Image (cartoon, rainbow, N blue to C red; front, side, top):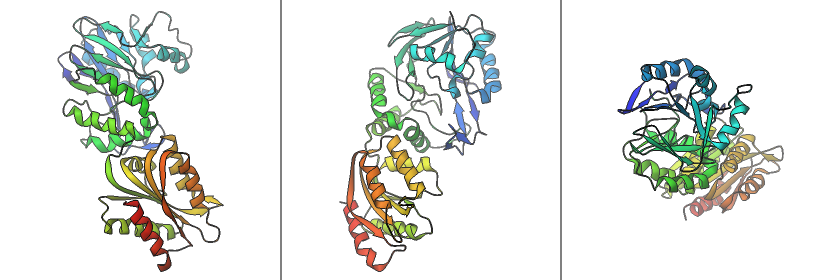
Length: 387
């Protein structure tokens, strides 16, 4: 699909609605978009390519939008294959085309394209360096670790557009009209969540620019209510609490732990929790569970003991939290064990390795199934979580 962003900037990206897992791990029920843009001026610049899965559609869009012209520059903001898949194909098709990218991106090119001679075909740019296309002046801003080390974003001074690479992206193909926040949050936490400091650095640089539109590499072009999107990115990258509430995540083998987790959720609601979200880690989308853990300020983990450790779905969940730099939260623990409870110890140890995570007492221990004698301890935990 081709869309006019401005009279001289066109969207030439493509939707991928048949990919089952993004990065071979994230469920994308509504697909994903691979965004690419074309700037038509005295010189012509292509802003990133797309995944090779959708090469044919992208080439058709590019050639139609060019209207017979030849591109001079290919701006490569990010070397991940879902954006860089057609770099060499473009260089082969257009012999005068030059890749404009950060030094680290140019160093990565041979890693992805063995055997191609890039000599004389690249231009390495530095922080705040500019490239004139005529009326359009592109300024390059380094954004290392958002979320790879070679990333840069590009600011067009003519139309006040920030081409933001993976920042401000979301899951979901553009053919699906859906709310931005939910799938952008799940995308951010799971893709960029570890790199909050780097995102904060980029937001600081962006605050010095007059931005009328944001053109990301996934998801829709953002042209209205930019304060909302930038505000959410500020919250997420500071690891601040977005929504008041408690997230209860459980991993249950035969259902005993599930009963206890649901009972605690009920108690929390009765005691006035503004929001209680619940997830079965054995069955629900792990990426969404990680998203909710970051969204809310309070977390309760409930898990069965398993082989002297913790039931694997809970281990996987906590491991994901650690990878994404989970921090600045209060966490309650419910463990279940029929003869030698071990889940609580393991969960506490894993949480203890995370920054500024407060373990809320009491830790509740269930023996096989929840009983009336367990309710006082669960009541105490529910009250402590809401203090």
